[in-house]
Image (cartoon, rainbow, N blue to C red; front, side, top):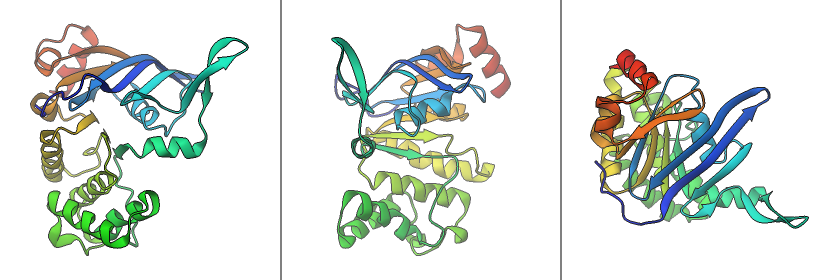
Length: 264
């Protein structure tokens, strides 16, 4: 389990979230609360909307309806009135970019700059987005690469690193932005089985520091060991959520039972 809840204000609150892509209604009223300092693991079959929900939280996808709050701040919109009625108005892209800095995200694919070393990949966004000096950004990058066990590989280019090492660089890069929330979108699904453990170990250590995390994964062992809550999604809705021992050991819903029977 993580270090536990530190604050009464949820780090993430998703209210009646809908997302449509044309005629496809991918998210159909998702509600989710993630307390500060906790780890939420999201499970579900392919196409259930898990990754889309993460992308909406990080505002990589615009939402169709609903509201998302991160650390109490409404994401992507401001509240106002239109013709005397309450209304939401989209924020300027610059404001959305500011909001996004509080969220770190790690994807299935590592998305590293191939022409930069591991160190350079972790330095770049700090300088370009946070405006840190190169010396300060380098010092922070060195610290984070040590934290993810890559001190000896900091001068290597992505092509010289294994998939697991590249994903650990991606985690260090996300942490370099000093996020309040970390989102992981199936971070081990593109890795060879023998490399999964090294990435999960970094994520476990991050949870132990009290970082708020939402993790989309099929790694049931990780969910059982690290999660404070497990959410099962299917067909764009939250089917079941609760403590890991309840959802993973004694699921109430038939769809959850069927899914776990296939993956365990």
